Every structure is written in structure tokens, then in C-alpha cells.
Image (cartoon, rainbow, N blue to C red; front, side, top):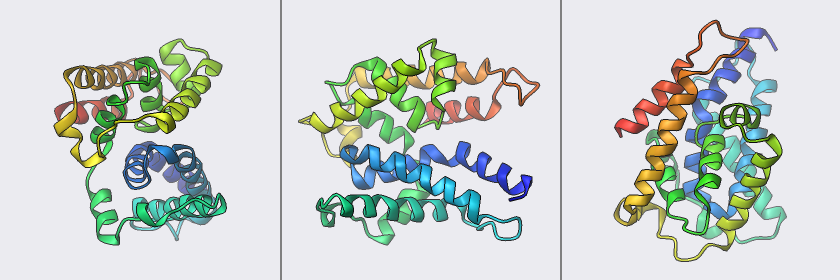
Length: 219
């Protein structure tokens, strides 16, 4: 693959990972977080092989979503788990892709009372903002091992949680404490972007990350 196509995949990962995760999270639910994460990684890996300089899909988000969604379904089938109740219509999927569901997903995660706040923050940084574990470690001063353990704990807590309201009613059920946690996450992301020196950039500011945080904060 040419460098241009590879850079497009990398930029797509940054721009689309969180939106794709949120859309799949709404469709399949918190109990399938592991399958969603694996499916997204597989989808981006396939894009590295498939997206040639003259064969990059016009709708990259739609391409990645379909590949990842089918991957999740295949994983569930292999585990002999029921899938009929969680399959959305094509119209609903298209709407989910048009709508940025990251804020709703952040608010939804905040409603899990049994999941510690620090765990929610780490989980959101990885899956809603598409940050790698190494980046989260550098910005939070947590060890990479601690971050992996925190994410693993979040998945277990999601599976065992009870009394969580339906995804689509989240704005009716969110508490002040939940809103405050989401504001804290968005503020943390902005600060990470504002002081984000990397060897790949001469700037101390990751403008994309700052703008994402500002956009979600405005919403």
C-alpha cells in the first residue's frame, strides 16, 4: 500500500473510531463491547489491505461500519448466542451513522453506577475518542497494565450491571452526577489535546482532539 493510502487509514481511525464504536454500541449493547472492539480493529486492518490509492471508498465510514458490524455478528454466531433481537434495520443503521452518538454513549456509560468513575474515564478515552493505551498512559500517568485492567473491569461490570435504562431514553434518566462525569471526560480530552507533543508533529497542540472535545462540549 502506498504511503498516501496508509495515511488515509490512519486519519480515518482517528476521525471515525469513536463514531463507529458508538453506533455499534447502540446496536449490540454493552454486553458485546469485546466483540465490537475486536471487530473495529479487524475492519481497520482490512482497510489497510483493501484501500489502494485508486480504490479508496467514497464513504469510508459506511465501509468500515458494514465490515465491523458483520464481524460482530459472525463472532456472536460462533459463540452460539442469540442475535435476532439486536439486529437493526438498514434505515436505523443509516440514521445511527448520520447522527454522532458519542455524547449519548458517554452519558449512557455514566449511568452505570457499579462502574468506578476512573474506569469510565479510561474506557471513554479508548473507545469514544480512539486513543491508544500508550497515549492514555502518557496523559493520565497510569501504567499501561493498569489501563488494560481498568478496561477489562469495565467490560465485566457492563455484563453484570442491572437497572440500566434503555439507550434511547438516556437524556431522560441521566443524573447531575452523570452529566458532571461526562463534562470531566470532555475537559480531560481537551487538555490532552492542548498539551499533546508527539514526534510526528511540531505542534504542542493536537487540534483535532481539541476540536472534538469542544464540539461534544457544545452539544
